[in-house]
Image 1: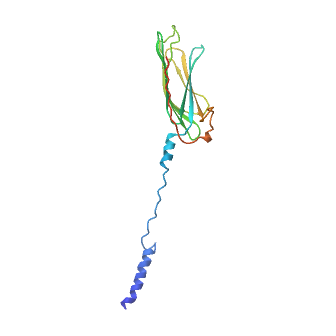
Image 2: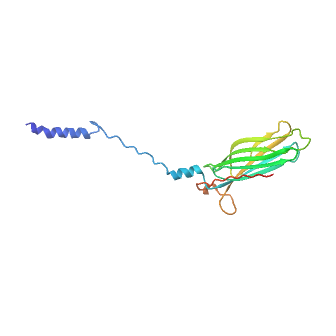
Image 3: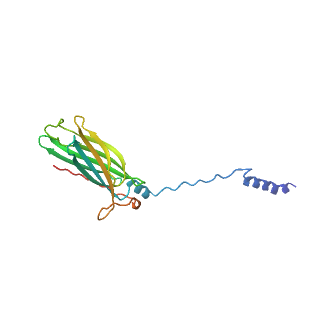
Length: 201
């Protein structure tokens, strides 16, 4: 008599183990999202293999007189950094200089973000100038449309009516002869950083 109940008891245990309402369910396995290859991350951090021409125009004007313009040009790769040091000495006045540091960054929208540092110590305007020495020192970050100039600062001499205006233009250059502008839609994905240094006397 006892042996007749063994198969029935075993069947009840099997049903209880396999029924979601009666017993334990195996937890669902979650898949970890795939990470991009390290090479792709490195290329994204490095930037695109495109050179950017930065043109900084410094306009120095006093009163209604003719403005004095200085143009500083620097070519830097995307997310690279570049610097220029232009130094000179004027007799009876001392050192004059134009120093510039720049770092461009191409945004997904096609605009160019530029971090710019500029130091401008011009020569004295004349023996009757109200100040013996003037200096412009600025640090800024600005977003530019490629090929479109933008006035980024206008400074006034605290001792005279002298005004110093800074305008920046960023232009995308393609690799190869001509250095013509490259459409943003054709930009690739890597970088060749470069820097420049110049000294004159």
